[in-house]
Image 1 (cartoon, rainbow, N blue to C red):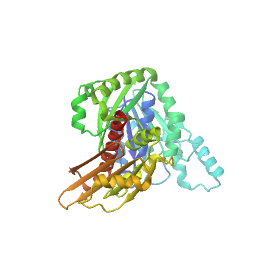
Image 2 (image 1 turned 90 degrees about the vertical axis):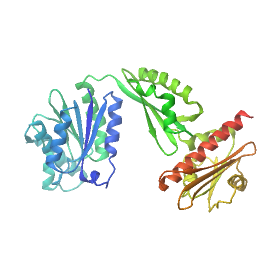
Image 3 (image 1 turned 180 degrees about the vertical axis):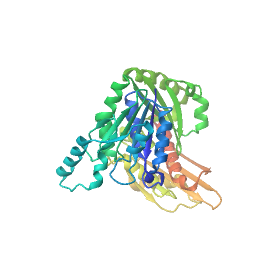
Image 4 (image 1 turned 45 degrees about the horizontal axis):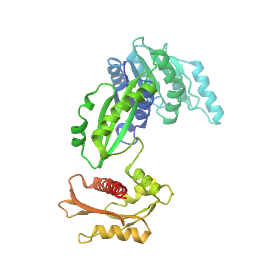
Length: 389
């Protein structure tokens, strides 16, 4: 048994809005142990919406649509589901009363086209929407169900929590949970991580997958289990093996970031850090400001031009001393027009390190990549200083 999500709306296809609904629905489905196999996006065309729903029903037991339930001409989800399931639309007087009551409570006049929202497929299960004007519904076909939710994120999430998840639990006797754990690594490439844990990526439950980002690799471990406690146990076994093999490449888990881990480590030692950067658009300082959240562990950043002849280690030292910080970092992204080179220096009274390397990616990604690599260097030098006392 598995599920499928269909996001409906031309504004999503055109890139005018980002589809956050599918991501949120996916996480909600995981919480009740319902696997998600497909997601798709379709514009405001009756024929195409109908076709996508029919395809979804041919391969998934649970199909959830989001969007297209408004009062306007381009809101076609009701009719598309009716066509795809072979059921006529019926006018529901009780839904109309609910819609009228919403408008009265809001002190607004209801236009004639809002009556369109009181239609639903025959024999469907109506879902009252107390936080909006678009009632939703569920069509139960016996072997599969279609759930239609509004596109407004607040309304969608409310109905998902209050009506859809309880329905799915009862309808499919769901007692399990799908839970994930993310291990965060840095200072290593995706191919090297894969070389170390490739056999774990072949597991069926828990599953293990990799997600490469700018200078970091995420190892996601996902378990499908009868209970949260059992999922935690399954994940812990795989996590233990992964950590043993990946060693100090692992810098944290789940919500951890390089900047938050570095600042937490500094704060625990009563130490601080300051930065000087060039060609990064202030990205390194921005990360640290956000992670510091006013604690004062981060003492500030200077953004200035760093030339090829400047010594990044001396700059890191000057940044620390100017701010009265324990640690200093310098990060420079420099382009000759042909290639991009990145230089990083990390300095403290106890240890220091600098490096330089070329960057082969898109120029727009260099600030993020260099910032993460600078933070990874700080993390490693902090560990070295701790080992050496």
